[in-house]
Length: 108
Length: 110
Image 1: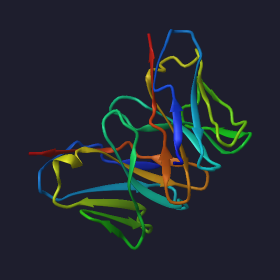
Image 2: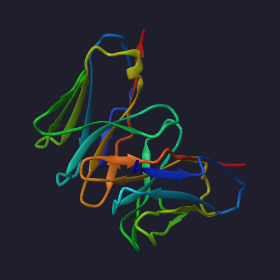
Image 3: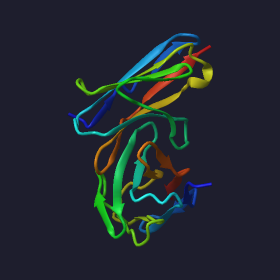
Image 4: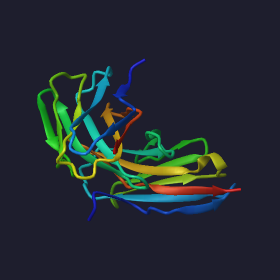
């Protein structure tokens, strides 16, 4: 099993729709979890940290399920500017592991 | 402002040459990382360092070397043994809650 797995997509979604991604991780001792956004030919930028209690930032909601070892990201009322690759990131004791990313295309 | 500085941003290398990518941080972070990203692909871990004078191989360390003589600096050398070095290279460090990235270095073999 890969350390961090994501569906690569692409997800083609009409503007205004709600879209959800999941990510699974293999190391139950992982400590911190994040969603990063990466635009083409740029470095990743932090979208949000992920907590078991769930956290929301505007149109974005993230959730961690430790028992099932997965992380989710929900985007409501999607905008054209949400088009990007979304990276699931898991930090353990000694290293940070990235998922391969999920590509999202918001269609006008 | 604190952050990570990578240089150069664009680098062209002839086959058979070694090149060194610079990564400097003023965030006082102990842990630093180097990742490689190929077009349309995810980030793959090359090397990481948890503390000065110590570093570990990541998933794709062959053909690369690093040093960590100072806390602020974690240079990556792409050696001639790396058969396909053309890629986007990212340096990172982290605090408890956030991972910081440099802007990346584009290496092209000509």
